[in-house]
Length: 199
Image 1 (cartoon, rainbow, N blue to C red):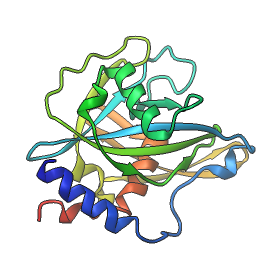
Image 2: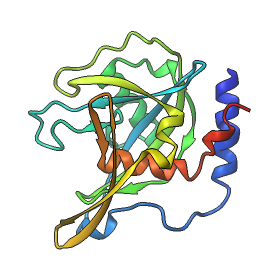
Image 3: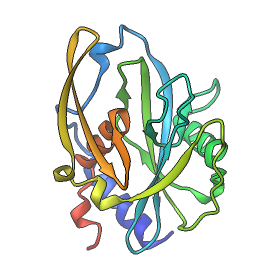
């Protein structure tokens, strides 16, 4: 195991020892629907660690053009870790064996009825990723410390499905990171003290 894996694992363990009130959720907008899903928060093992994100094709039925983590529905017989790794392989040809899994974080209940489990893992840098055209229009990397710094996010509100919905967003090199992806990142930011990562 590498130094980044060890440091990030320690911060993950420290941050998940107790309940944190007020984590972001859209459960109140989901009308009781609850489809299990999982996403891979893949952190690259390099001096400035980054997180791998994708942009969904603009022609997709669900969330067209949105920035997302690799991931999707949990198939029967799978757990969240298996699903996240399978989806990353299907979407980006990210080898399952390349991911050193640290653990799962807080589930996020989306307004469209998905219960999403983030799976935190460390992967080698410069993997020869190949996006699946039907699922991924583009992929890119964002520095981990930039994502986990709450000061870099803008808070907004929108009236949606009969209620006010608070959401966060960030523009990174022309990619708009917002919605579910932003909420998962900001919940994780409350668990991991990224300022201590370089210690």
